Length: 491
Ligand code: AMP
Ligand code: MG
Image 1 (tube, rainbow, N blue to C red):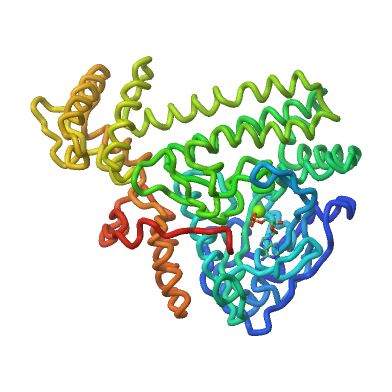
Image 2 (tube, rainbow, N blue to C red):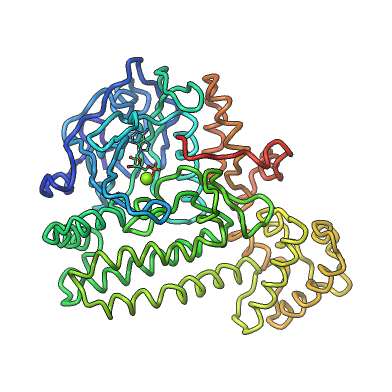
């Protein structure tokens, strides 16, 4: 394969071929100051068959900083609505993001190039259409961190900075990030046509999504229900993965729910440090609607909003039956993940109790979630082993000892071998996650135009399960200042 240049990217813009009710055609608004490259993600460039050396051309920052178009791009802002914090908002849409076009790579995969921070669109409402460097870095790094963890997510192609001033709580600078996904259609894309009673558009959207992204269902007589059932399944699996890794989406509104079951729209989000089921990562979420332990339920709530929009297309009873499977799917996947995190191979009825007791111990001692699971891989099941390092995490080590005896028995019941188990556990218990304070360090340096930390974190987080010599400090618990960084919706 000859890699493409920017000018020869293979565009195939299926969304732009839909009727104009689905979007508004609009070009990015260039920054007043010249955009410059902060970081390009080689792995994502490869998905586009784009030659990695293209990132070095000034045109790269031009195109992905919103001041240049290349042949084949047909920029548009997608229309959608959604339920925000439980309340229906009749019109949202891409207020600061622009779909530049869809690239089809040689393997036949489609990738939306979605430029966030691209300037005003007809859907900007009171916003300025911009993103600040801080939030662009957070999204850029987390997309790739989640991908590294094996969690479905939009990908990030590049991060471009400018010296343009953007006004938030303080004056910041504007930046863009290019997100990639096979589609950026959201639950809210369905909601807008349902609530506007434009059922022909709703059906067109459903047919389009099925044809492009669920082609195996296209000929099925009950394709809408089966499509919905697959969205339920994907969403359930996704949220189970978030729960297992200790991650929360801070604004789990229906407009931020991907129809493909991807993690989408990283505003306030967070990996928990200390284990705390009530963890709220968005400091504007006063009632904890999107608290960590609420996320599975919110997934169901959002899916029921989606089901409602499909009522004109599918029988209510069948949609309801699909929805009824949600909780079981979340539980099944969550328990599968947690069993692997414990290093267990077989499935036993009392594993749930073993896990519950461990979680209750962790809450009581505010144990660092990620560090503990990683260290659990070193558990010695030999007779008389004290597992001193693990027990030090707990305020009540005797209660941990009691748990450790049960765990040891459980391991022995399946002839678990310590060394083998550790290798397995290291593949599911990450060493490196994007803690808030690490992102904050990269942001503060980048605001001084030192982008080295962004690059270092990108490389580190793309392989979160692998020991990376010299990088141990990045696996440490946050220092005190880094524990309570508040992340708001302002971005
Ligand atoms: P979000 O909370 O980022 O998911 O955004 C919710 C809605 O507000 C979407 O329609 C966004 O496009 C829009 N929005 C957020 N920030 C801005 C901004 N600075 N300018 C214009 N629209 C925005
Ligand atoms: Mg959003």
